[in-house]
Length: 223
Length: 79
Image: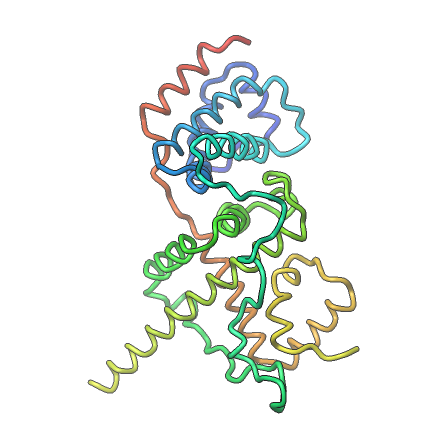
């Protein structure tokens, strides 16, 4: 089977797994382990632990596939097993896992620096002082690699719960419902965490593009 | 229908993109966007950020030994 192409539908995969079709198992292990590793890394303290959590997850999939009822997509079901395994593991490593349904101080307050907006008493209170400067279009970005590095660095700086939610939603491409189901959080809290995370990454990219623009302009003056 | 300020708009972007706003707020957002170039740029940059996040990030995958051990487990599992 071509591992680069789209995966067969869940029904085919599940039937294969239940029939002991090793190729079907290898297919999903290869397709999903990267995403599972990234997610596991947010719960446990070392890369080795993350690998073990992913292995444990796949073992649980082997053992549990007979009981999978198809109420959620297969991949969502696997991710939920990963999150539960990783949480248990994280707790055992006594890495603090402040994963409650409650939002924390990290998740409050404006997501854009209030100084960017006109203040009370000024005309047009609450409006931009200066509009955000446009970014180079993605096509003209010889910077794509550099942009991705900045995004990765921004993700690493996020509070963990925000990072987990934005990774699932925007990196892995899960829907809001799926993320709520994987993490067992409410839609409202999921949205708060996601919005803060996105606003932070956008601000980091904005800072990066501002530096690039300044450097380019200096270069133009110099030549 | 009261006007939305830019500092309110920036907090509604994710809910707007998810289609999670009530009808009235949705309409206020749309109206604000039609009037405010700054917020339209902000929304574009939000979308661009989301697209960049979704760009393929190839990982290193499971270590070969771990993968082999899992496949072996799968072969020998009891049905």
